[in-house]
Image 1 (tube, rainbow, N blue to C red):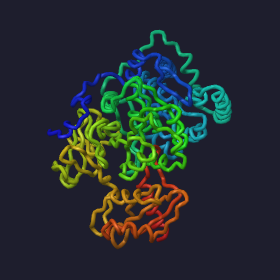
Image 2: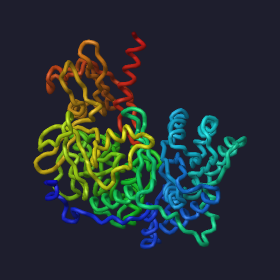
Image 3: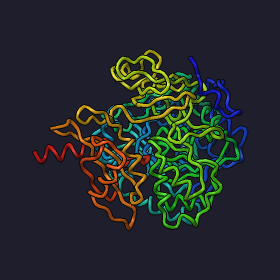
Image 4: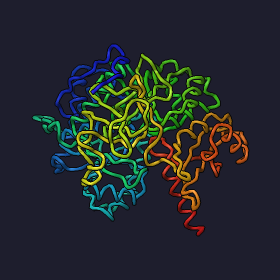
Length: 557
């Protein structure tokens, strides 16, 4: 197919790549062979080398085998970003396990669905989540619980204090446990490595069963093979010009596809250092950038909003950052310009979806960067726009659904052939995202197909309203949502969070929107909020807001 985007590739980026047909754990092992003494992780100042993490992952694999884990068994991860994550991740894969990464903040009911659907019977988590796991174990057949203390990976004396606190939680929560209980620290420091060999996984074997966020319905298990994940790490490394001297500030959770591939795997492939933060806090992130001098970070737009609104942002030096990669939600022009003005950083928008591991498009690292565009397809990625009606190919400038063909395309949805068939048309992946391609091969997203608002027969793309929301000087963040209306079918409601100290009225905001929108696009309702519901990576949950509005309507009759 014609690929007009190739002419805009950075000179270091080839049209095609050679992908090694190796298991995912070779990303770590090969880098450990080359960069043994270089730091892989930095966690609140404490560093661990590639050699150390590789050896601990080997010992974890040995321990899992001794516990009876068989190749293909599922192991659920309920962990934040900390050095134990890559140790457990690569160790589990070396044992032949399939990783099921989950948000540790999920409710027991949400976890019940994921455990039942995946069939995971082993879980690794932190002491602070053990109470939840014990309640869960009364509903699903969990056989083995592995707990890891955050304190074990912190510098002294902070680590000792944290470990004592976590040990108390362990003793309290596991007192009457009927499961086999294991201390992660013991497993990664005592295993016998004599004659150890990792499980010889094949490229097409299932490596990670990662669930969609459920923001467009019931969460679906996305089956990612070893080859999918390895290929995506190589694509990201080449596109981002990653090298061993780079330092990634990993704020996005590793249990999310974006955090796993962009924040962890690609940088391990490069032999770079990963500065890990267990949760997002704008002040702490700014301090970490100032102190540890990362060269790259990967974020979602709401993180840029939070950083830009820090009152004391000017006291922090962001100069080490060559780039901040932005994805998972649309980056509005106002968010990008405000962040770059406040920090002198460079926000580079990209695009990905878990059905293709994660990132598969981005603006060039050095070349032409188009504001509002999600950029160009990565090497070996084919992309096109297809008609929403009949899936026929559309020319540049025409609005339709983005379709992809990529070596990172999932094996399918777990135990869900119907949804798999809907999403994978021949050998193309239908993304569910509406957008267009310009004459130069840059792609743009207008909205999710399922988030289109239809008012009196007129199509409204929420992003157009979102762009205006972020341009208003009093607004910190906000989002436009379509909610049912008995007369027009749907109406537009906007949820707004004002900047600290600002005041505004509904009439004031409606007047603002009328200046820029045709009458049928002007929001019918505006609600001021103290905060907005967000996903694990900070993406505002449009569907959650819509569902809440529907419940209110039903309650009120």
